[in-house]
Length: 422
Image 1 (cartoon, rainbow, N blue to C red):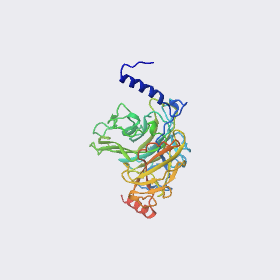
Image 2: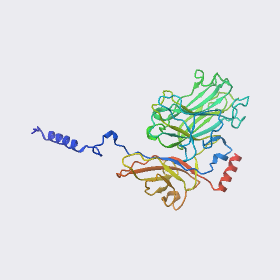
Image 3: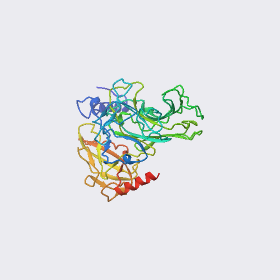
Image 4: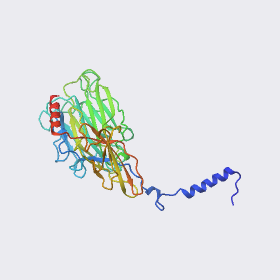
């Protein structure tokens, strides 16, 4: 029998013996590395209204929902995937990677406005107009279990010659820790009007204005994979001779990165912003074969906003990942990304992983207390959690997947009149 020299020694050994007996797997006989953790779910997508505002919005330069075949881009590669689409029907642009690949599955190069095309040999949207301030947005989805940060997502640029000299570029690229960042660049000599680039991506002659800041949201992290995320960007050229240009980046309705006081183009004014490229490029190559998709691509002269839905929208949760099986889940809606005004709380929902927001499936509360549907006056954000059949609840997700509600016919007509008057 073991002899103990002190009471403290006895307690120490007793504690070790107790822990060795009690620290066992929750599933006896199952290796620890094979025990799944309960994922925090997301709302993958919302079912959109049949008519979206951008279809008749005079501020919109271009839109493509990838639902009706291939639109006429200046340059295009890669297939449309009919099995992945924001909204649950139609298609999306493939932007994933094979293992080790630098070039992804697809890209789209859109020309518009005063893009140099003297022979009329390519499609140029709204040919001849000059745009000094644009917004562009896409929905992005990374395959569940995604790993790594692909370098390039999109860019807006000013092409000034048939040689593809660039007066400026506003990049949306991967930043630190799976984030997105702004990486603006100028192809003009200081505050002069001299474009000093000689070709496309003339890195030796570009002035890089600072690869910063990185978004807080880690869009290409494994934890944020498996659902659609809204990414909107803005590029505004500086007043000639001043440094007052802008670059901004929103993710899921939040301003995540901003650059001010930029000298994009010096005093150069012959061309404005005239191209937006959707890209799929990974400098070091993909860690593994994995899918990524872009959808609902819009370029506009005004902020674009998220998709619109019917007043009793249908929400689709990400497929269940975790131990055992899905037992139940709940969803809440709020009128801002902080959740200050929660306006809908669902009942405990079952194994069906979609829900219509109505009084049968939950209750309206907050500023919509007593209502039976959502109001077109608000933007709505979702959060969701789920329970496994062993009784464990996941954490709530962050507030995400923002959407708006379609306006009534009279309201819609008033909106279009106001847009045209602007």
